[in-house]
Length: 331
Image (cartoon, rainbow, N blue to C red; front, side, top):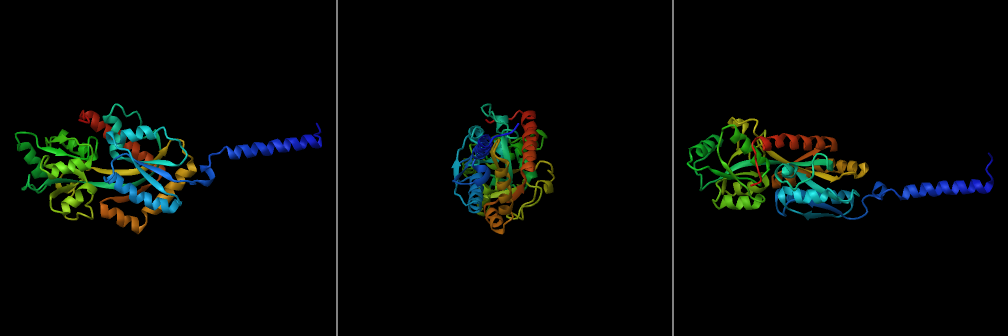
């Protein structure tokens, strides 16, 4: 069949129009991202460890991307409120969320949490590790020097010795409950809605023991109001070099450190995931960010999207078993 000149022109025109429509129908993020400000959802209140780390990271990422990054604090139910809303956000590359250990575990504690942290989002990178420390109010428990003396005190008390953490489902809470299930201690957890109120009552003597994140505890330890008895990390931390680890005190295998990373809505374009991951790798390798993180008590810890996904799944299932086996609740 022979095409006339007019038919050939029409065919070429339709083909060109089809290609143009196909190109213009692609999300702008696929080629020109980012073209406007980006929102970073933080599922905890301003001033806490997640917020502090997020703001340092957001400032550095903003410089590299050439667009403002606006931090949006949405606290509630260990991050479950923010995560539930974020799950349905448009995957256009203009909204990200901080994913942290308590939020990963929130579905095990809150029936209203319908998301699965390992499958409902698109992991981008791990950003930091957050060491935890077990500390006591020096006025309430002046004679305690280590974990063994703390646990002995708890067993000798007529009433359960109270301790707190940053909240139900925090790594400190789960670590202590795991040790309780093994018979090391019989301390009773007191749940607060965040690190700040937990620390306030510890300093006030309402609760004598806290298993806290380093960002919250470090100023009080350095200020002399709390005494650190152990760090919940495999190795000693630079900011508290004289405080021994749990393993050094005979409690290896019960360590607890939190971590924080970045996720995007599911189906976010892969080129955006890869771009932010690579920018994050370079940010977290910089001396400036290392120093700024160290000052607030956290450690840079980059992981690829795939490795971040593996970590999400491991924590969700592994710690989830501890929650189930010990019948832990958010109360």
